[in-house]
Image (tube, rainbow, N blue to C red; front, side, top):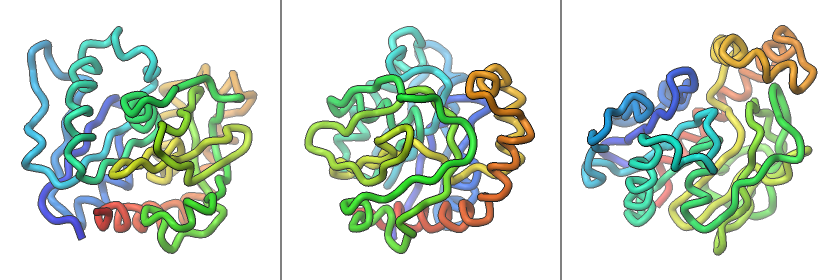
Amino acid sequence: MTSGKVLIIQNDPVENLGLYETFLREKAEVDVAHAYSMKVGERFPGTDAYTAFIIGPTPISANAIDKHPFLVCEWEYLSRIVGSDKPVLGVCCGGQMLARLLGGEVVRSPSKEVGGYTVKLTEAGIADPLFRDFPVDVPVFHWHSDMFKVPPGGRQIARGDPCPIQAYAWRNIRGVLFHLEINHLEAERWASAYPEELAAVGKTRDQVLEECHVRETEMSRLAEKLIDNFLNLT
């Protein structure tokens, strides 16, 4: 298992890493860089102190990095992380930013996904160490409008409907569009922060919270398993 420290890059005050951070703190030392609050000229910590990295979500589009100074700074830092050959996990927009950095595209999803869904592991996903001991059909929570395409040289490890590409692997990098780290309390905070997005998908607040609630026991179990698997990536 990976030893040492794990760095979480939190890209939004609302969207933290939830259960992923909770489980990480039980298994490793953890630092959190609150990138969204970084001042101009402030720098990310050196990569040498860390053995793995998790890049968190943000409602900002991965195609709008150049409009946000903290993401411009983060973009350069991510290039160093990618080159480190250490395990890196990108969640939702975190995975999208990494995909772009690796030469992949970020495009609009065929449909906005908000609430509870099921994604399916591909054959490559069943064999991928990130999803070791996962079921083929995975209950997840979603809140996104964009999606990544698999970077050149990578492989798709999960698929879904309506958004066809749900996760990819590229050497030491894993990107997942979905959330396992969310419980109904986190979902309630997101619903309060983004009420207009509920209307855009034709769902009520109560409906989305219930979709999360009925999945959260299994999502929590799989979130811990994913963290264990992530820490064992080489």
